[in-house]
Image (tube, rainbow, N blue to C red; front, side, top):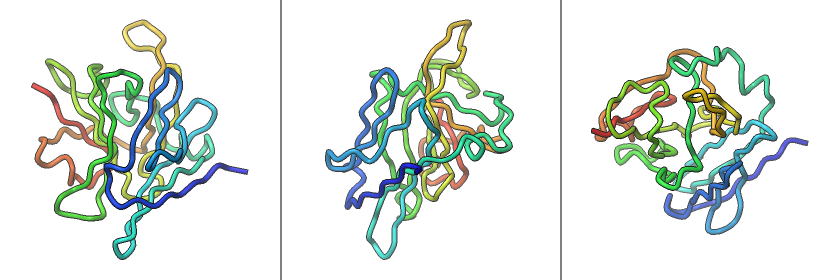
Length: 179
């Protein structure tokens, strides 16, 4: 039976991320919601119904995870270095919309992002089911095999935004270059 868990929250600060070498654990007020890991693909999403907010972690099939994806890190596949101590993974919300939520994390590997300099910030939209489909995988970066959270999408999702527009960007994924 697929894993599924939903927990209520009041403020996005109640949602935290605990990274290990092999998984990204999501917690709400200290209770484990679920773990993005190598054993299965998952989607994470937030629902806001009449002011009652919940976050859901749901296991999905590998077919659903990879449907339509070309495995091209310049087009539709995002690698996230979740286990770097610098990434500071957190949940953000668009100030103009109570229904637009993002997983936000800083990264120094510009794989796919067109940035120069010190890295970039990922903005993964989690405002509805299956916007983020992720799994931990072994990938090759700079001729080395490394462990990364991999998000797979259908179509070109690499969209550069500014820090002022990224939290409210309605697409599936965007990034902000750090200059």
